[in-house]
Length: 114
Image (tube, rainbow, N blue to C red):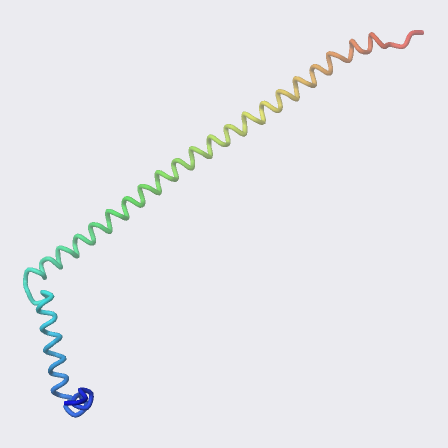
């Protein structure tokens, strides 16, 4: 047997049988045919579903918490803006009142004399 490819080409049924038996043996070694692994696979499937649902629930809870924090931050930002605008308005009003109080004094002091 110098070249295995020529033997494979000349004996296709024997090659197929060998490949099939090697595949079945590999599945047996991996535990595909034992009843214990089937139960493990079933419990593993239910564990996967439970883990998925738990992760989904945790993600939803984290999303809700994030939304609550963002809403609170937005309310705090709006309150800060309102306070800043009120402060600017009060300062402007105070300056206007001070200017109005000065004007009569200035008029009396610099009134043209006849």
